[in-house]
Length: 139
Image 1 (cartoon, rainbow, N blue to C red):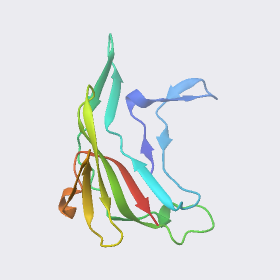
Image 2 (cartoon, one colour; image 1 turned 180 degrees about the vertical axis):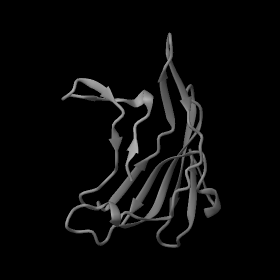
Image 3 (tube, rainbow, N blue to C red; image 1 turned 45 degrees about the vertical axis):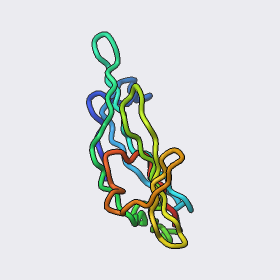
Image 4 (tube, helix red, strand yellow; image 1 turned 30 degrees about the vertical axis):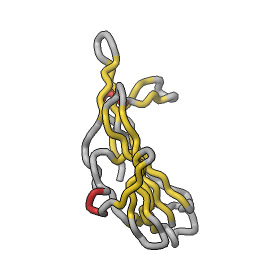
């Protein structure tokens, strides 16, 4: 679906030479083997004297299986179903933070938490969180 840009995200139109609240949408021409989705976790807004920066901590309820066949515009639409296999997480704020990862072992379907030199099993119920930052899917 189309989404209109916000008042602070206006697009510069080269034809009319004005900033406008344009519409954006997301489509694919073909389905890649690996699909990486980067969630917007940081916001920047212009203040009177400086730029305000904040971390967005909303929980994004992403699926374990993602069907994007309705978004593929090219001639080959089959095979556009993906399964989640890894998640990059960010905890902390803008001034300092920590990255961890969840990844699934394809041999036994077990999910693991990778935190520096420590690796442990993680329950599937913990995968969706406000720390999710980058999602990795494969066909």
